[in-house]
Image (cartoon, rainbow, N blue to C red; front, side, top):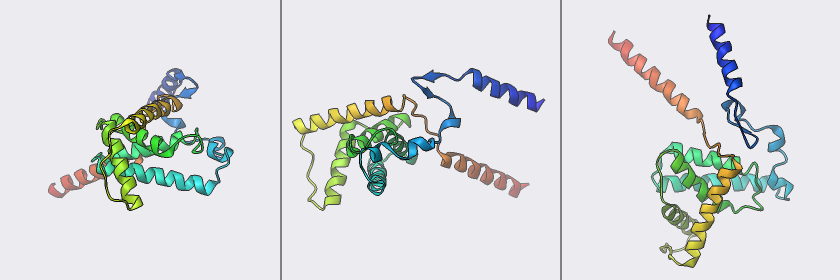
Length: 195
């Protein structure tokens, strides 16, 4: 009986496969194929693998630090980092500004995880991080034409990330399952203590 139910579920999954611009929306295909990993678009544009690795690390550090300053939940920061990594496995660091894409990923992830932050706040936080890292005196961001241009770039980058990922922005984090198992274990151990 159980085997028949599992077979029916597998058949239902096969029937319900939906193709949106060559993007299959299934969790079974969340691992990148080898042809996407090597050589990456950045390497095809002449960026050496070590520099690409450093840019990926820097982007994730910026997303994590900005998320902390914006008081985002950790799951939103992790989602932003996953979106950032996915985007740069299909686009090149040479052709896309890393910092702008990182801002867009933070903004997008905050919306996905239902903790939205204004683009102005994200830009201010990135400006603050840049000043702290460079050792400059912290100055407030001036709301001039440069700020308006930067804001428009972040909005366009957010759209570009969505388009490049085929609007498939669901991220299943492994620590969510681990946390649920830990909670279940603690609940069971608390119950058995009193029995």
